[in-house]
Image 1 (tube, rainbow, N blue to C red):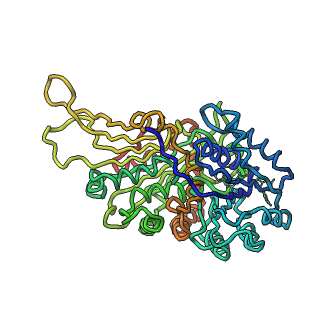
Image 2: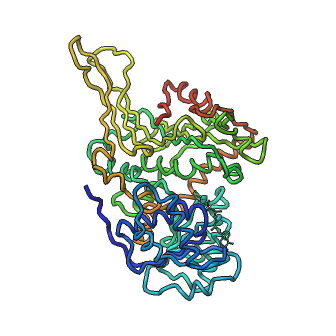
Image 3: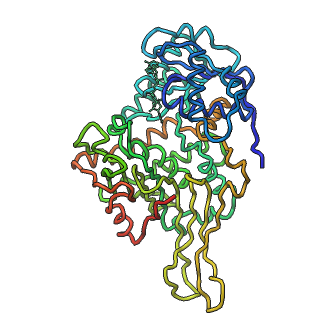
Length: 484
Ligand code: NAP
């Protein structure tokens, strides 16, 4: 099966922070892959902008090296790389000063889509919005792409929304959460709303509980300074995991369009129960021969920031009342894996009598590695000897089902950038969604700050602190194993 490439309009895309880590690791290599896929209009321009003093040739060289390092698997042809680099320009600019702004104004074209990617620290988002407006560079059709973190709490998120709203309409603001750009995450919506099979069972009557796990094997590494001010709750739960939860829990939107989808997600966030501190387990990884512990990775040896969190979340609405959502995420865990598991209830009565170690139906949506969907069903164990039941997976790995081109699906960033150019906000967070997510998150964080909670230590390479196992055990449930 060959993936279709849908052409986009001609564009000028300015990447503020075009020399930074995110631009070199994700954004530019992603755009290069879109170029190779034939999706970049002939005259499209990508304009890097940062304070570093260099010309277009210097920038092209920098990005050539970035593509060599981060361009992804597959051969890179010199002709493709040169062809892509020809789209690149560079303007030295200071987000906080006057330098470079008139140069940028002079090269922007009028008759193309204009998009501005804010790939700089969040402290500069307001400055960029203001100067784009002041210098007449952005117009009412222009789009801005805003990176995470979007605020540190509700107050700062509201302030940022208000600052951006002074210069841009909500329809021009693309708040990125790259989890929404993942193929499987969109497939979750296709599975739910494109099939009659699952939706009738998708509620508290049939679903026992839901587990969402995002486990990483790496520690905070060089990002310790940033991470220690954030922690797993702000860095992962408030945004990425909240978005996954919303897509599982939301009502079917009447259309797959930006506001219909985002309205439904917002209703879920507003229906989330406050979380009691007893339903939260926080942890910090210990050091081992493979690397230092959390407290050595960050500057504060007495830090109380969590590198792991597990929590039980309830939703107060007709569909989900009584079905808990268990969320867990952490660093330096046993395996790098992200998955959502919908664990269904047992049949109300077994006509086969008691069977040992029976486990019910589970639908697993794997985000990484090996994106795919797997449904565990019960069948008869083959052979004579009576009716013994056994669980087998109905496995739909996309690569197996859709052929080798399934590996070539665009990664989250490239898909989302192309959505910006197309003007499609469906997979971007709306301002009220982000605020609602912070309104739910803030009291949880304040709760553990008020009681001076200290995270439990956990072994690197484990599934997190023992107490996180208890979170499910006391409900008569257990976590799925963290494994690749
Ligand atoms: P970074 O490596 O520190 O890069 C920052 C960029 O901003 C550089 O290009 C820097 O270039 C430019 N810059 C700094 N001050 C500036 C100013 N006053 N005017 C103009 N440009 C300025 O940061 P990053 O890791 O790429 O992160 C960028 C944004 O993406 C942040 O909001 C971050 O939270 C978010 N993010 C990053 C990642 C990631 O994996 N890296 C993942 C998710 C989200 P000069 O010093 O030359 O000006």
